[in-house]
Length: 366
Image (tube, rainbow, N blue to C red; front, top):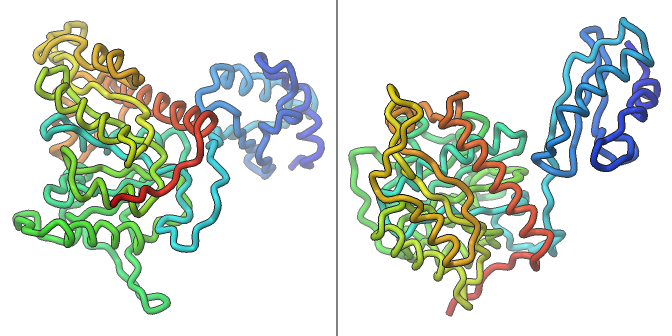
């Protein structure tokens, strides 16, 4: 075992290529542990997608060997992204006090793969080292349970301070709650708007979400009472709009973007995701067939002046993963890589939004 101060001294010789300073002075070294199995170092780079991190890791191994000798083994280097958040005033009535960023995932119409994007995006952000939650707010058509193979899951409920608290399912590194956990999959929900809105408030307020970097809220298609309830009850950091390149989907995506940008809602639109951008058959992985049109999402993003966060291909494995409860984002395929790139973009846009714009506030809708 090696003393922490000796390890820190060795790490002062590791210079970040872009910053020109050592990683200790920059505050990138978050934690050091030294045991019988070797030295474990946790890093918190300033950027979630720091392009120099691989170089830094290699330099760490060399510096430890050079300073502490050949018996000094770096067993693990953990990358723990730091999230930029606003220091907003604490509100006693906040439904989600431990959640740093709330991101709404929406679509102008159904059938564009919104929930598929939400599930795989949440998993991908969790794989990058963030603490993540997913709230399935699609009250009338909850499909998250099927996509994570948890249709028969019933959450644990316990009582504290005269209030029932719901324990989310933790799966694939994500805390998940859905209306589908409380109803039979074959039953049709026939609820009036206020009833659906109240149930959503319950899932937000009584869910044991704990401390999260990101909570993704999978909204119903279109615009509805659920959307208004969300922005009235919690301060939404930003919204992501999902579309396909098809003209009818693009027309509805405009309505979604316009809703979030309206004066009375005023939720920043982080960007647009184009799903089903092209079809690639498994036997011809280099071929692209633009079944629903080409670059419709890109053109709409330019027209509406919002970032295009990613283009997700129509690949059989994505569909099969959603049906079998084995999300494609868990693997290392080209599709999984597309979702990891999407996750990078979303994290980057949230960080930029929090740097450049005023803190999020709850919306007062009259």
